[in-house]
Image (cartoon, rainbow, N blue to C red):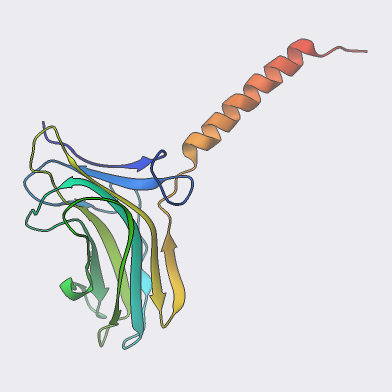
Length: 179
């Protein structure tokens, strides 16, 4: 059975408490479309402005599929969303430790907004998925940070905190003396 999924990883990250991990063993890249785990916002941009995208990523066992792991960028031109391959942040194939990636380009003429989707490359080996982690994604416009995504989920920590709080209340309740 093919593996194709995105999950928060609470053990491998560059910024606490988590990163996002894409697993894929299918024949081609896989898109973590925004409904898969996290909705990525529409980011307003100005035509002609300097746009810088940067991310920290780690990867294991990703082969040269039709497209390697990357951050897919669409630009809104006022009437429709358009793929901008020249704005994709493409990662190298293979395996590598946490590394910083980025590039700078001009916002295309007529663009009013951008959005992005994470794409996970594949191992092409059933049962042994290629794995790509993303963390600390940032978008700068003319040197000013306009968007940041640390791919964070606090849910397990909140649940653990509530559980420890409940244990503490039970312990205190059993030892409490009424005067």
